[in-house]
Image (spheres, rainbow, N blue to C red):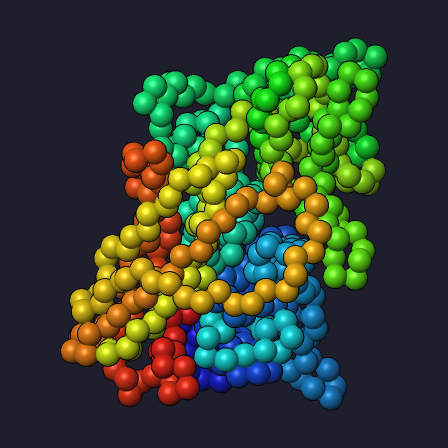
Length: 458
């Protein structure tokens, strides 16, 4: 823990020691900063990262105490970072790597990027030695996914595409009575093929997992495949290294005559009557005619390039991602609180999704409920959204707490489960999210909300 003593000035920095631990701290007020000191030797490289509560946008800065005639505690800033790159849906966590040219005492500072603060602005500061030649020292892909505990991702650039993707998707549907045995998807390395622009594109069958690299920028990879009338395909793209906006995979399918059939660019008409375009990590399509088609893979610019994984496969109607609008709940004895969920129904899935909750605290029950839908403005022109956006349904849980329900001293982990239903048959029960729940006395709740408590869970 960071301790109770103030450490908002360089001379007040908390000493981390020779082997820096993970520090748990709080930026409890606006404008607050936290300083920590440590020793570093010449030639050593350290990595610093922050894991924070959802309300905090952390920033990291590295300093060295150099002093001056006017201020013996003057600190010179050596490096700064608030996040690797600012882009929607990417992590806001700060990350910083620095190689020390001289031995001595240094400072690392944690703050809110815009000076924000509050009791819910909590963080973990971690310091990692970086070995020479290391390409990545972060704690893994989970560190870039934010603080959400969702267990399934469908339409993101960083979800994993593996050879068993078809098996996983089939596990999220109601299997037909005579379902075919799932098989591993063949992997085709397009980088292994010799670069010959005069050669015909490599022929592939569905399903195929295409791996390759757009290198140099402006490079184009091509494959061809056959489709019959009514064939339904899905195109999924993963960016395993760099992702948007540093790598922007553009997919285009055209026929033997060069006529474009589809792309992964979703065009919509916004409120200013202007066309907005955005590339998407998943695209579905049904072929109105048979023939031989070519898939083109490139970056949408001529500036960037990196590794990609493209899965070309038949569609599988299935239960998609379940979106839960909270990661924790503070419940008050004798009151009711709601939790909203949205279920995505992918690739023509027309069944039902049963939602259940297990592991509730004593005295708490979860009920399904209905509520009035808010008025919505007239729909804009959403383009061919059936290709790029899943159909979705909303559900509501109401958590009812008994008057004499015992309070909880620590958060209780409650799991939300989903189960697809189709044609009267039940699919497998799948975990959706772990929800942290606390039950408190009414006197501990903020009156105007009825559910927020002083002991916030972040």
